[in-house]
Length: 205
Image (cartoon, rainbow, N blue to C red; front, side):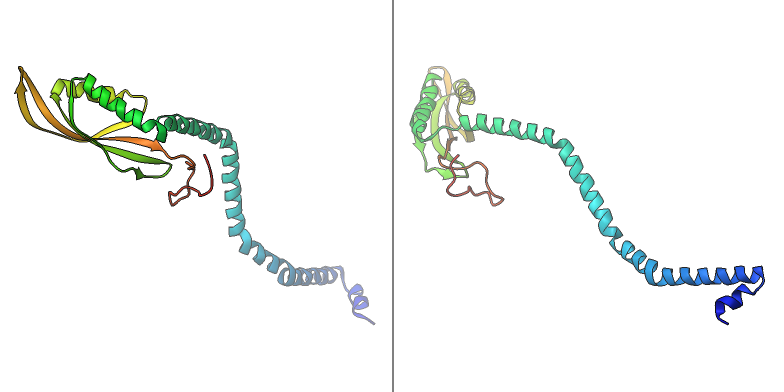
């Protein structure tokens, strides 16, 4: 007589208890050898899954904002294009310097020194400093600086020093030294630079 026959001969209550024990044993084996290892694996990858969900959410937000980023990029490119137009190329520099000198004379100033210095390369442009020594009234000097600020090309006046006021024909005239800095666009350079700030070699604008 086998075990099954013995169980079948028992009272219903005993049969139920045996069945419960068998099911409990099956569930215990399933938990120990199947479900528990899978649960451990799930818990192990939960942090990575959470991180991936966060990254996915962030990327979805970026995709949603793509039109705005593209519009900002187009606006930045347009501003850069306008700025580059304010940087003269090499052939325009002599004319630009002549215009600065002409504005000074038209403002009633006398140049005792007008000395362009060596270019200072920066990136896609170069600074062109000019040492100036000017004689004239304070009013004429302010007028000259105002005209410089309204030039279509960028010219910055720095290091202004006023000295030796002298009265001449009823006017108090000043000796002024300063630096005029204009900028030249460097041809065959690329305004899109690497993190080091150097232009990519071999690329043209």
